[in-house]
Image 1 (cartoon, rainbow, N blue to C red):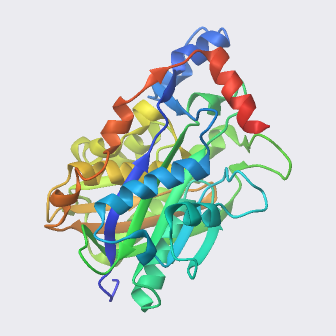
Image 2: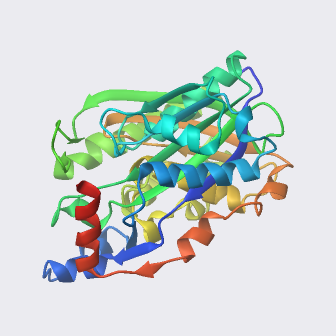
Length: 348
C-alpha cells in the first residue's frame, strides 16, 4: 500500500494518423493468409516522416497538461520510457522538457525496459512525489516500434505515446499500490548497432509474456488482498490482440473488464506506449469511484502492476484534450510502398 496520497493528475496520448492494414502487409509478402487475423490486429499506426518518439511524447504530454490543473513549469521531473529514442547518446527527456517549457531544475532521464519502460517511469515519478522531493512529475511511454521486413513483428509493431502527470493534488485517479516482477528471460533483444530486434518466436509466449503477467498480477492481488472481481477495468500489455485476452481469461477477468483497454486491435502494439494508451483509453470512459488494475510487460523480462481508483475530478478533465478514441478514429490508410519509404526514412 502506498502510504502517501499520490496519483494521476493529468493524462494524454498521441497516435500517428497514418495506418497500414495487416491485410496490406500480407499482400505485399504474397502470404496465403493474413497473420494479423490470428493475432487479432486489423491495422497499425505508422509514424510519418516528421514523427518520432520525441514529437509523439511532446504531443501526449501537452494533452496531459491540458487535463491537469497545473502549468508545465510546475513539473519537476520527466522520465521517458522507450526503446526507439531518436538518439543513442542524447536524452529525449531533455528535448521534450525544453519543448514543453518544464523547469530546467528538474529530475530527468530516459528509461529502457522494452515495453514496460513507460510504467517503470511512472514508478520512478511516484517515488519522487511520495517522498516529497517534488510536487508534480511527468512519466511518458513512447515508441516508433520496428519489425524487420517480413518478420511476424511487422504485423503488430506500431507507434504512439502515453503521458501521465503524477502528483498529490486534484487527482483524477488515486494510486493504491504497485509491484514488479523481473527475471532474466531473453525472449526479445536487439544488439548494439543492429536496426531490428530479434525474438525467440513461440518462446515469447508462455515462459515470457504469460508467466510474467501472471506472476505479477497474482502477487499484486495477494498483496492488496483483492480478487479479479473487485476491479471495474483491467489493462494488460498488448503485444497483439490475442495475448491480453488469453491471460485475462486465465486470471479470471471478464471480457467487459478488459474490453476498454484493447486499443491494440486498431493501432497495433506501440511497445512502451501500449499499456499507457490502454490506461488512458480506460480513463476516457471510466466514472468516479471505479477501480483499475494495470499490468505491463517488457521483454527481457518483467512486469509492473498498479491499481488506481478514479475520483470525482475525472469527468471534468476527460474532454479537456483529445481522447484516445479521437486519435484512433483519425486515420489515413497507406500502401505498403509508402510504409516501406517511411520506415526507411526513420532508419536513416
